[in-house]
Amino acid sequence: MCNSRETLRHRNRGGVPSPIAGSVSTFGVLVTESLKLSPLDAIHRALGALFTDFAGWDMPVRYSSDLAEHHAVRTAAGIFDLSHMAEIYMVGPGAGAALDFALSGTLSNIPLGRAKYSLLLNDEGCILDDLVVYRTGDEEFLVVANAGNRFVAVEAIRERARGFECVVRDDSDSVALVAIQGPNSFDILDNIDGLEVDGLAELGYYRCLSATFRGTAVLIGRTGYTGEDGFELYIPATDAAEFWRAATVAGETRGLQACGLACRDTLRLEAGMPLYGHELNSFLKPVQVNAARAVDLTKDNFVGRDGVTAGVSAGAAVLVGLRSDGKRAGRADYAVQSNGRTIGTVTSGALSPTLGYPIAFALVEPDFAKLGTVVDIDVRGTAIPATVVSLPFYSRKARA
Image 1: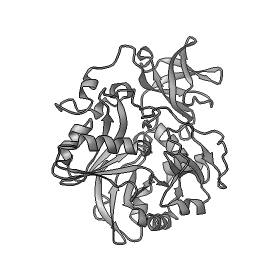
Image 2: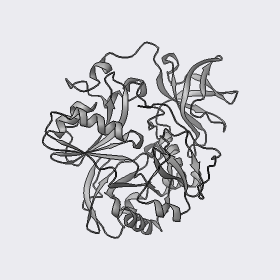
Image 3: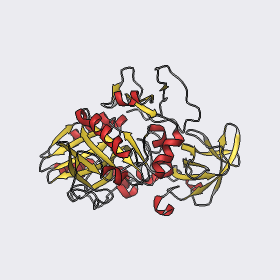
Image 4: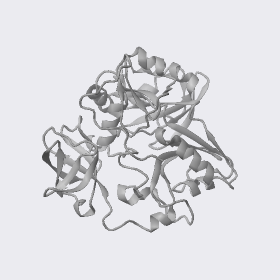
């Protein structure tokens, strides 16, 4: 498996390679020559989107501007095409037990209609992917993996499910994922023509329920990757365009704006959410990246357990949040220093559109991870002071 952060190539509306000034970070992507198209591709092109090669998919990186789309999600609502994500179904009486063995958390006891964050670990206890698992039936689970890790996740889960009474089904190519995120997201969903759903108002965070859109089955999760209230809707790819158009109509008077991957990156960074290939990779263990809560060591047997319990070396890097003053932001791969000595590396960074100051994730030596510690980020030869702060950088609860 490749764990390096690979070059993100942006293409303008005419398909000519072009750099993006002020790009928030280098996404962890797999670039291929033959790109998959989203079932919403024609809609994106009609909207004049700028595209990017992302994990082998041609996906919209922005429609208008990163800042406008970011602020739309924080103040009203944004609609995202996430159809590049992987949807893996586990079906059968042994599905829960298989997931307990395959993943770091205990999934078999998730109540129907709930979701849980978990990790796919290797034998050494390092992270192959981070995932969300929904319980969609008494003997059915939906595992959502990152786009770039689809085949790694499918192969690992299938191998680990051997001997359990269940079927592993990769439905990634037939399922579209549309996210509506922001303070107005509930009002928009509640007014989509043809969306029939009971109990939406009572649906709590990390919960899911079944619905229909004009006769087609839909799964709605109150989940997201932006730090705002919002929903993620899993719908057959053949019905995705019709749903997007209906959602757009419902959002016309509610501030809904089409949003690309660039603003999703600054939104998740502000919310303190890691991105695989940046904050997570197969050389890092959960304890290093604030993900130990996703590991259930009360389980006697799961892949990676021995590696997790073996711990890490005394000097192993740990993930921290950094805040700077001014406008110059550290970016992915910039050095973090103390008294001129490199003690870590920025994994993601941006000038926060919401907060107005630079923020960053960084992997640093553990002696520099204490809250309030001041370090320097080498921003193109200039040492910019940064302070270790608690995560998340932004919280809608704090805002309220």
